[in-house]
Image (tube, rainbow, N blue to C red; front, side, top):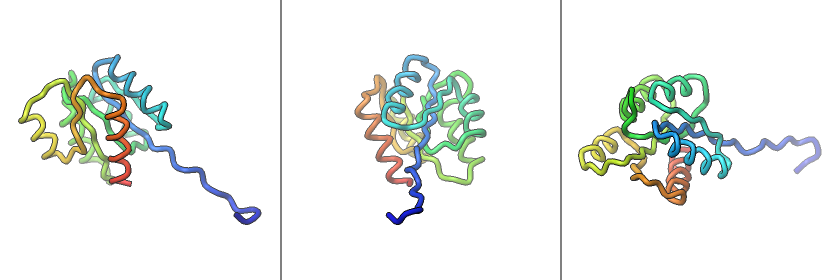
Length: 133
């Protein structure tokens, strides 16, 4: 590298985790933060929308069922307002074929069943970011 050349630091990707289960939300945030991601935590769809409006978010990790808006409704609202294509990983405790079909129809990156394996969420996040960025 030449003297005086400024090398940019690699961009730190940001992940918005939205889950009404505080323990799950915090664990996901801790796992992703430990891997070097900037994480934002939301307890519901409305809070996720609020965070999305003020932060640069690269990836969504959302529970399918939350008290105010479902994960699918929240994703739909985010995608209608964003000019960027944001990948989404859904997490759910419900093993329902229709739910999986709806997630895939919404162009979700994947659906991960609860309880969530730290290794599985790490791999899914890395694959999604690699595909989209």
